[in-house]
Image 1 (tube, rainbow, N blue to C red):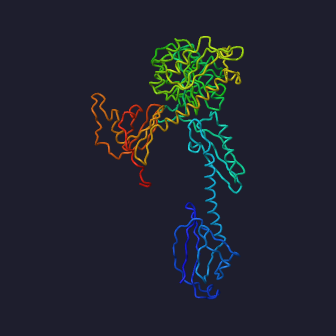
Image 2 (image 1 turned 60 degrees about the horizontal axis):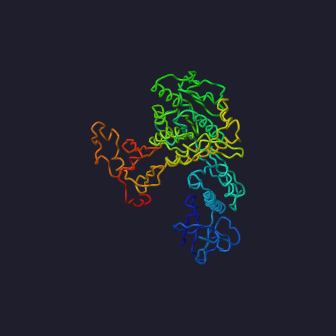
Image 3 (image 1 turned 45 degrees about the horizontal axis):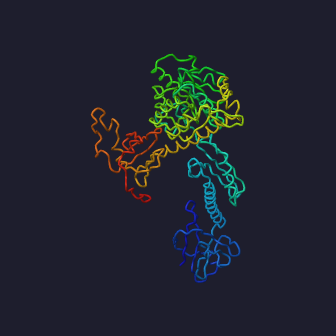
Length: 566
């Protein structure tokens, strides 16, 4: 009686099936075997890796063979199998079998090549996130042709204005080219599509804007509009898609500081939306372009006008929208901060004590609204004959704001006749003299804004997440190093909305037993810089501010990870 041995192949993703007939026969002649093959019993061998057939002498033809020297040894993991004496072997479609084995080897080889490339790229660390570019998800469309030694992939960064994108491209080429089998490397650079961290409840016009930057001073005449316009054109020069919104209805500055061909905003009659004007590639919206000049109206009407101009404009895809905030901390400013999901704020001041008093109020407003202030720009520094900076009024409010409120960056802006003249000529200084001293300062400010916005977006997007393996909600609030875990049922029971708590009496409507202990969130989405929206299986959407999450009872003994497949 003979036996048929079925060996499953090496690669799980592309299994190879190799069939070899192994029979113990008395000693028939070859013609007898060819005319009447013996019956065989199927045996199933366990999965073995690195299965291969090695030829000893000559390649056999299809059919029965009695000579071991004319056949192949079956080997597993490069160890020859022991075969009983006096064998006959049958091989069918040898060439097809060889092709299948080669295809399997190719799959294994390709997978190893991909692993080599990703391992090499993981040596590149993003300095802003402190994580390698593979873990950040930057590597896209990896394609390998190992036979030719060709590797191509795309690096998708968080913003086209990334200040170190050239370094990423250079390093990626270098580390992959060092692999011994690589002959040609092709790296393509791109950026993520423009979108806010949370677009669920935003007006249609704001749903394709990645970052919204407020430039504020809370005081007039300190150079806020100059900083806003030149920052916007600096970001555009770095490769970003940028827009400027002049929110000062009472005294719009944008029509004076830029010179677009069309100085009137147009209306799309079908969509009833506003089409922004444009200058040097930057989109512009200002009440000054509405053909009305300066507004003479009461505060509530102004808030409505600002809301309409901002939210019904067809901004398109923007990486950064710079808002030139009006002076003060009143209704208009609060409306802007609440309607628009501000990513960050840049504070502009002068050295005088009076400026510090007003600026401090603005910083406290942003702090209360959970908008991080990432930089302070202080005007009024001068340069001596040797090009060194000096401060005729002393370093006052800027350094005080940085120290008192913990704002990480301070930039000194010199008083130059050209800077003042550019504000009146309609040509931003950074565009008129891109290699000048002022342009270099704004370049540093632009890099700071790009890096800080990237950090904030990353912190916000990962602030509150659900870990299915331990069935707990993980919380790491932005601007905090503390990380803790909450039980999902506890979070659900602590909802303070009108659906769970009576607004008039404060009576608890949602009872303890109404929430199952094993409830799990279906989705967690950030809402700006202050809260998350949690969607539960019953369809309820809970708004959970970070401040509230920090007061909820925490899990002390975090459960062990659940078994895989549980």
